[in-house]
Length: 156
Ligand code: FES
Image (tube, rainbow, N blue to C red; front, side):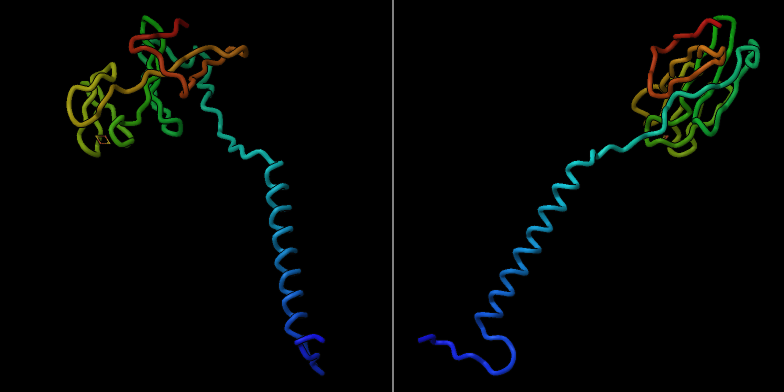
């Protein structure tokens, strides 16, 4: 004979435990199923391309110094060609300003000469020179994701 007396109304203890076990099994199953569905989707974070067009070569006559604020780049054109230098300080990422003798960071006072080499302050390395190239449509392009050696100029 069972040691559990059936109750007249409501659940017996055995019935309650059965329901609880079934509920826990269903929740576990759904959790596993959710995990499996989630694994089928790749976790990819797409980034905006760091290559951008800056215009036709005739927009940059010799002597041009142009600041592209939205791209954080200085563009220079001289007799040897064109080059692009990042205007993001290599110390903590403030935006540097051009001055007569080069560039100066307003945040902690780093100073860079006209080629971007550090001449003072806490900046640990020179300003990166960025790759300049020509797109097939004739526009000049800067690749902010690709550094080139200091002094590398693109012949227009
Ligand atoms: S961020 Fe430029 S010197 Fe600190």
